[in-house]
Image (tube, rainbow, N blue to C red; front, side, top):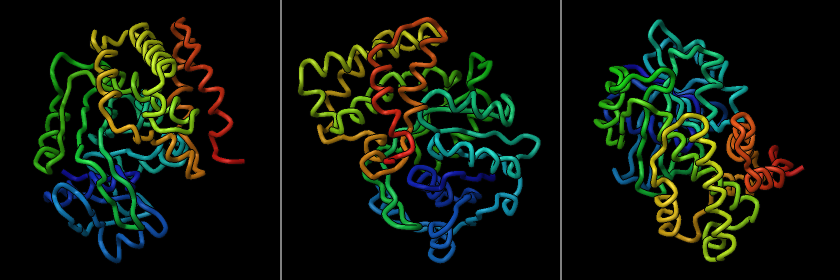
Length: 309
């Protein structure tokens, strides 16, 4: 199986390196110093549960130099979609599918509008990685989980292409979980992630500062309920105990945990405000579900969408 990674940064680069290490035919689309470092020294992974390792693989800024592949992994931040989507076309063959691992629940629809519904598969990923330097990715936790499957017209069982890709990932020591309907895990993560990102971003504080305050914690959980109501009104049958699981999980993680939105905000970068709280607000309006808490947080964060002025 031949794969290409668009967004060979902390997430895509890490998964691409694991797949290449296991013998898969992997190429990455990269630019600038990151591309140059990969070409010169290979793609290095440090601090990982597999130990430090380096893989040597093609790194191209022009995807036409890679050509058609079997699977494209899309792992850029959602605010980079405008520049990333055009890179996909040269990688498409007759049966190529594109797996989007982006945050939120908008990516599959947005991607389908460009390449067609039949090519798109999707799912959430759970991983803690960062770029130490150009060409060097550090794993900062132990998670390396991808839950993915069909999004449009899912069948009762896992599709063959999802199963084949999951088998490849498992062989690469990625904790892949193929599912028949990817909408459910996408929304179950979104129900947590959108409030987590919005609250930590608006407060400029890690989750502990919110969770330890009774009023803030109660408001956080009501925001979780808002997103759950949007999911159900959208026809997505998330688990009945999704809020209880989110409360347990949020209370168990280190209080110093920051969302990627907060990390980007504090680093002066663009933030995924439109695909997280913004998406909740827009989708709530579409299905007639009020989202006053998420709407307020969206209004606070929206001026920072492009980073500091």
